[in-house]
Structures are given as C-alpha cells and as structure tokens.
Image (cartoon, helix red, strand yellow):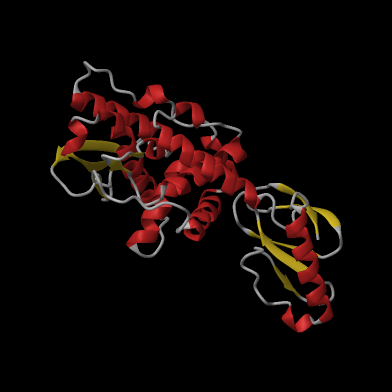
Length: 299
C-alpha cells in the first residue's frame, strides 16, 4: 500500500508475469471453471453503510468474497492492527483463515473490499495449490487472479493519486490492473467501468484496455495493422530464404517461426497467452485449445 506522497509505479513492467498468470489460471482451472466467474462482484456486495457496525460489515464482505469464489467451507476471521502493509492472511489448513487489516481501514471503509479481495484470493490459490516461485511473482499472480475472476476491480478502484496524497493496493501498477480487467471484459463481455468511483482508476483502465486490444492486432492475426503485417511478411520471407533463422525469437512481433516443411508460426493467444502453432499457408482459422478462442489468422 502506497503511503501519502509516495511515488506509484506506472506502466506495464510486470506484463509478462501477468500474462503468465492468466495462462496459469486457465491451465489450473480449465476453461469451464474460469467461465463460471462470468459475473463480477457487484458494488452493493462490498459497500458499507455509514451506520453499519464495522466488524459485522467486514465479516459480511468477507463472506461475500468467499461465496463469490465458491469456498463454502472456508471461514474468514478478520481483525485490525497497526502494520506496514495493507493486510495479511495466515495460510493454514483451514477451514478458518485469519486475516489482519491495517488499522487505517477503520476510517477508510470504502477500500476494505479491495484489501479482502487480495487476501481471500490468497486462500483460493492456496487451496488450488497454484503459486509462482518468489514473493513478487506470487503476489502478481494473486492480483491477476483477483482481477480476472471478478473481484479485483476493487483493487483498481482503490487507486487514487493527486498532488497531496496517493494510494495503491497490491503489486500491479494501475495500468496493469486495467489490462487484466480489460482482458476479462473482452473475454466475458462485461464492462467494469461504471463501477469505478476513482477517476484515476478509470483512466488506468482505459490505458489497460488499449494495451489489451493491441494483443488482438498482432500478426499473424488477420486484424493486425498494415505496418505490423508488412513486418511479418518481411520476417516470413527472411526465414523462407534462410531456414536456419527460423528459431530466432521476435519479441517485438510476438511470434516466432519454426520448421521447414511445412513452415509454422508460433504466437500467443490474445485471450489466454497460451502458445499457438499453425502452418504458414495464408488465411486460416485457429482455435486455442486452452481458452477455446477462435482466431482469424493470415499466416
């Protein structure tokens, strides 16, 4: 949690880890399970009334998170204490999990849902036995999973920044939260923008959405722009003339050629980022075996 006056990182420095986290969710959960989270948590599920008892309200929101993630046998015991971080959860065998929230949330109730979204997602991933090595990458996985499975729009909405103070929860940058939420919006046809109360959150979402749409416009996808298509054609001809270069990665283009007869192109699925391999033979349609997205390609 950023403190007032601190610098908040922006941009997409963790993008490859975020994309890997989306792939990992589809692999671990399956397409069918991921799509049971087609509806996000609604603002009414996490809102606090001015006269609501703090502790009863926190338990109500925690139960809503548990129900959203379909953890019926998990019980979240939430308390407050002075601490450096926004929140913490004790990952034990269950069924009870102890979550501690920063004391500041006693007076900033609007962000309690965001803090709980991250901590309850830790429990969900713990039960799935899904993790990334290293604290940083594992926290990015948690933020990404929360956003993609319908609770993490709260984490972006908790982002606020002006000349006097700043606040951000989680490890992702605001724009990366926007990117994951945009990926979810494109996959589930759900627009989270009307739920944002923070103007800065909406701006970050718009930037993330623009970046997510670029994933759908990279060769060999047929929707690629003229300049990208020109580069792809140049690269393909280079490989055809010198097959020894086929294995050379092209990180900027996001694709790589392999093989000789037939020549194949490998590229990431714009939905789940699983690698897709298709023959180089002109226009064709490919179907991602992981997320079932059907892609129009011009190879």
